[in-house]
Amino acid sequence: MTAASIAGSGAGTPAAPPPAAPIGRTEVVGLNGLRNVEFGDTEDELTRRGVLRTDVDACGVALAGHDTVSPIFVDDRLVLLWLDDTVGTPEGVIAGTPVPKVRDRYPAVRELDAPQGTYRFDGLLARRGDRAYLFLHDGETVRKVIAGYADWAERAFDEGHGPC
Image (cartoon, rainbow, N blue to C red; front, side, top):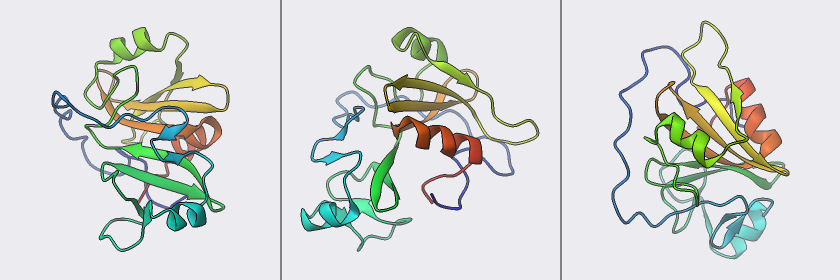
């Protein structure tokens, strides 16, 4: 995992909620991953297939054709995807979705409380088997969506790590 802070962590006041996604967004991340990119894929495998790009001006590597998703690798395996504001789950949850709607779409969601005295967001973990969605929220709306292996999502939340 990287040494940077989880989205919304660090000093400062959280920014205003992101705007709702535009109609017609095309990027959806499931619990297996994206089209042509699955959790557990290796960096070498994705590079050979031309999916992993190191030639971009981003924080770390990027996925070709998926500019709105940031991959997180641990021990050469894809474990998490951090989603931009216009990328969502098959159930339609994106940044800007009201928290009650998340609870409706994922009834078994588990509450995760941010550490006291930090500016990090609380979380909702929607787990299915060894995979999960982590929805970081400000109490009213989702601010960031992360998908991948449940243990790594929870670890990123607990330790405050992020993609950069």
